[in-house]
Image (cartoon, rainbow, N blue to C red):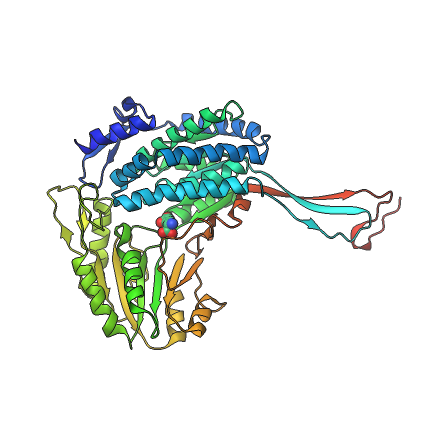
Length: 503
Ligand code: UN1
């Protein structure tokens, strides 16, 4: 069966009509073979604006539904995802090229955030705060915010949507989603899965609670500029964030930005090298280096460099690269030619700066439009460009260090600040790394890699990563508005700060 045919079948099982896949001008390709799998119609600017207005209407009703009841819809969404995990996971593999366990893992991440959000739907609480005025009560209340715009990237085409959507729904918001143009089919699948949950939930869910806008950058701009969208959660490149952030700021809308990462690991003298090796391999080569959290820079202490790096190189030389739908390879394709070209450019620049490259070459598989590569390990004499930039491909730059303070400085000396890790059994080093003058990233780990975070923690990073937090912990607060309420139940009117104003 061709991939196009399998895609149509999978989408059909999920409830997406096959005629949607034809006749449009947005050509969707599977990176697995490079073949065309759909030609979708894109939404017009006028229809996109209409969808946002519709979402605003839906919000006005949805916000009145009690939180725990809203949680019930997300519980049903989680059930539907459980029931369709195999199909959706496979579709992620087709559209993004992820190996099966990662395609399924992405859907599991969606199920997990639904479970989290269901619990949260009964815990959207504020504080009661001591007041200086007698006979008064001061408290804060969290109210639904409005329409949440979600702009997602190709590499986690559905999980990141679900982080935002599960929280937004229990928080009483409606969602308008602009998926990546590279991965619109998994978005249509999610839309259909969500529609099933809505149907089971019944009439208390207004129409327009979720809209999917298939289109290009211009459609994204409509979402970013629309006055009825008080929050946009955008995942993508730092370049995209530099455009989206100021546009939102201009109209005082909120931004949750999850942008580039240039994640590093440190292997200290006391590290368990077997453990480090496995973690580094998954962090750097997994998902073909196309996670925001991918390990891109590695600092190895000179006392263990010669024990670790040759083993690492061996792992790079032997890792299986190939078709994720037909083989048990650990590394699938890059998303497209542009990703391959960017990788080659970075490797050429690294070589010019004295880097010694292992791997990095193309793996031919009989499909000229599919881009498979051997992951690249590059031993660098020091941290210069291109090490300081994120290249969204499997390149791991390896550097030696000898001094712990100096390596912490090097670690933090890049624009991005998403994820980081240290491999050490030395308590002082590990605490320093996690402490105030340690890693400056939003995620800092000890003895695990940079990628593969669980949904229970807040996900996001500092500096050029954009500062947003999604997923667990108290990330939900971005999806609600906070009101401070003071109630006077006394018979007097004392003013705060001792002010008197007697008329
Ligand atoms: C992303 O790459 O945008 O921590 C998200 C991880 C995954 C999420 C990655 N749970 O690697």
